[in-house]
Length: 222
Image 1 (cartoon, rainbow, N blue to C red):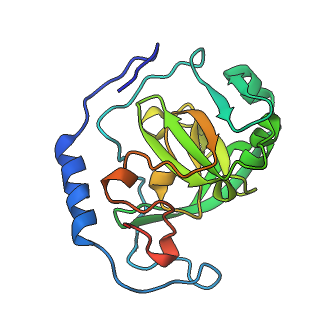
Image 2 (cartoon, helix red, strand yellow; image 1 turned 60 degrees about the horizontal axis):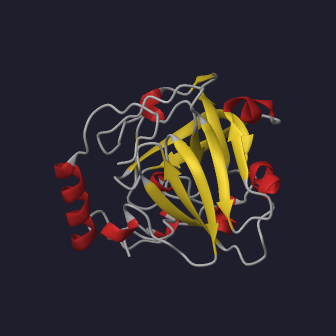
């Protein structure tokens, strides 16, 4: 995995990756139900937790503020390379939402502070042909999103959780939060967003996981 100038700790959990690939092949955790986010707070097949489980590939990069930032490139009119100071200078807000992990847990009422993704994307001015986004993190992790799922007012770059700085195990100093999709679509330690015309599957998507990941439609695999 590419480390650039950011130090990494741990090693990829090969057994965990193999297990989750097997889940995709077997369709584990699928109930066959279809929820309604306007009616059902807990998506099908999920269980509510009070703690916040830490799930990663075994690599938790140490990203100092001097190395933190975000690049926006690809199908944009004005590519951006925003350092930590530039991101902190943007208008910030607070969001409270629920999060849902594909491994079957959900957690209610998470309080985040950060920057709205529409404000960030507007700086780069996506071109009309841009329809998808490739998200890349400091640990080498990638995932894909339709641009329509990224450019929403409830999607944010998070710097804080529960009114404290976001901790490294949970993606600090900065992660993406896409609350309406399974949590693997909200990469920790985010460093780059590339807009594309075609969908480009990421780490879990090439291993059998769904390209979008709607919890209420149980888009775990596909």
